[in-house]
Image (cartoon, rainbow, N blue to C red; front, side, top):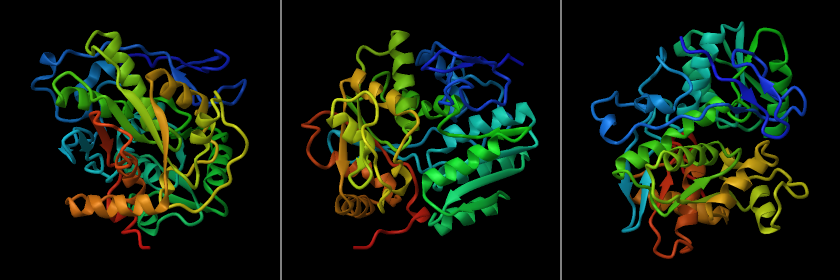
Length: 368
């Protein structure tokens, strides 16, 4: 089996051995990146490969998967003449988080811990629970008070132990980190563990293949902790660096106006978060993150791409969900945020793709 690449801290360069259970930088306690620079396969060489995200084996830091559920290779359908939607809710647990969760569970399986812990507002927890069930790994998911009952039911159905934390998303994350510091524990963090990003990047590798070796002018992406946007940035860098793209798309980050720390930092021209953002109720619960640990990286990725941040109101999210449903696409409210942003007219005729990240059955229809 190929040795695991080292991880490193993007802020201070501290390195962590690939096989270590350490989940953060031992110096600054920030998230880690992966020392891994793959070369993607050409379009022609992808013909006839397995019909899952593992078809992009050259770009993945783990090989020979043993717990795949066939994740990835989701459909791309048109919404307008210039905007298409990638149906990333058509995955085993009905959310795009499966792309990263399979990587974390596969990594945990190789590490052989006593237990796996995770924190989530819903979809990441359901994905980690499902893949841990597949791997026969005991799993505990810490969730904030008020998490969707359907998502809790899904986690428990997969055999995960659910710990509800009195408080918001940050309180659940803090509880999971405390548990992660216990011996022989694997922290399946979709934020701190870079393997998750190397799973979500396959979203863009699929787009590139489905569009015949190109990408749209703009990738419109919902941003909470930024795992899909940072994964997209990784894939774009890999494809462009290999000479498989002639131009890079702009990355547009979307946040709910009610909880928009990154959009506020962007407007201020800052490289890091500015001030304090209070937790507030929003239909886009999956991206309601007040202090994303990878904020600096997210802002840099958007800036380097020539992109921008957009915010959407609760009414815009509600109307976008109904509009998608009228087109035959029933998605959860967080998943409708990107379409809400794309409908504002800011695209100006540019070609774009929006991800529909979670199925509507997970949250139900938003009511006025």
